[in-house]
Image 1 (cartoon, rainbow, N blue to C red):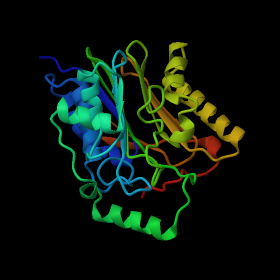
Image 2: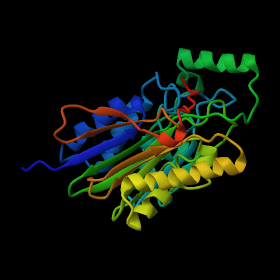
Image 3: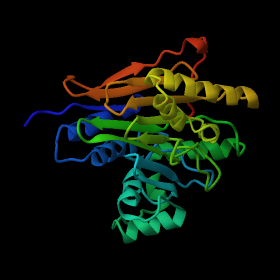
Image 4: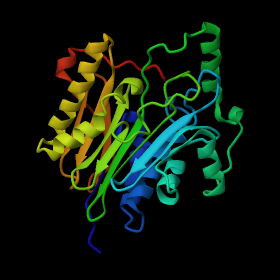
Length: 308
């Protein structure tokens, strides 16, 4: 059987293992694109060393891990918001896409769905804070960090393409560190953390979700591609909108977007600040790679990483 072209790209160096896991499944024709993206994102979620995604992610101000995730092939979309009791959220979001009449489920409803339909039993909240994460929470309590303080966090966004199968995008996060209970950012929203149109391409975003969700950057990127822009220029235009919002509000807003064309040949990435890195892997390459994304207009201003 002739091998088919495939590609996976993702946000941040911590997605390296995720890109490997996704690529390994893309090489197997019996695995679907959706399954490959779930496996890739889940590899990041289960890494206890990542402070902004899944198990190991920093909790909300009450000390509880609440996660958001989405996955989409353009025609279907599944999302969960403020999900508690699980080490990762992407598998539940995938379950919503496959088995629910609804597009998004939140809170206790998402947990009930995961148990009833997917057979996934939740864990006690205390089991979902590994020692280093728990210590970060205790430090937060000692410092009495003000609720609502402007913080940046790093989301895992992943896009996978395979020849003949199309393109899929997914996103997962534990959200802003020590956020208000029930807070939802851009990650699980269509046009926020991820967007896909099978005729045009797919995009994912990372950054200050409370602000990114106001401009729908992944939707913007795909719409610019629909109008004829290349993936790189589409990402630049989407980031211009993010930067303009920051200027209007008088804040330093962090954001980054990756986009891939529907045929997997055109990749773009841009950010508001220096320091954003894209991870990827394409069929025929010996291994996954990481590439810093140049941002000349940032003039050396660096991305804020507060989930270390």
